[in-house]
Length: 217
Image (cartoon, rainbow, N blue to C red; front, side, top):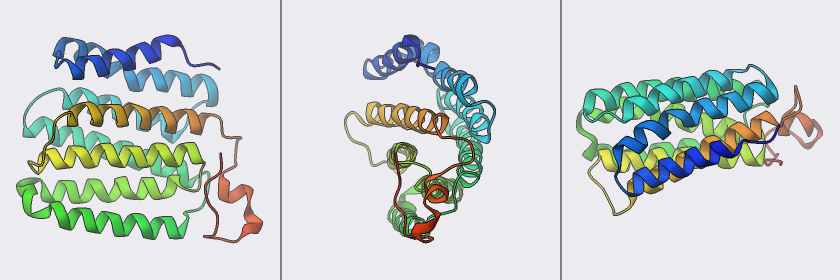
């Protein structure tokens, strides 16, 4: 099934709203992104844990439109649900790629050590959430190249949010956060939707040896 043009129109509207700091447009466009991708996923591949992850993502998107620490924590909790659902969906498709898991574990530890002094009361929530995010990205590595790139972009997007939480801002950060987030959801959803049932990169190349396989298409 081809993606409808209004999905791309919604993404363009959200990015325009962020670039212009126009909140009414963001309130209209942002909550529609995950549901539109969910509709595509259900129409293409049927029900899966990934679909529930998109439901959590929609709730998180709405929460993060509201200013304040409480809304930020609610949004983080919703996206924690997203990462867990994505992780389950990926592990059902392919075994964990051990070198990728080790690499993401090192990255997780390094980034948390770097940001820890500046996070204040958000330290523990971000520590827990980022662990789930890193595990999701590691699990995505063995599923397909598209899914793996999407997961890496998800991590990058949330890292940039973490920089903001640590008061390490830069011009245009919000736009980069949203652009990488939209690309992440798009690549993860479309990449997962086109996978043949019961297959993954590692599963499809079982003769290549466990832990020595790179991501496929």
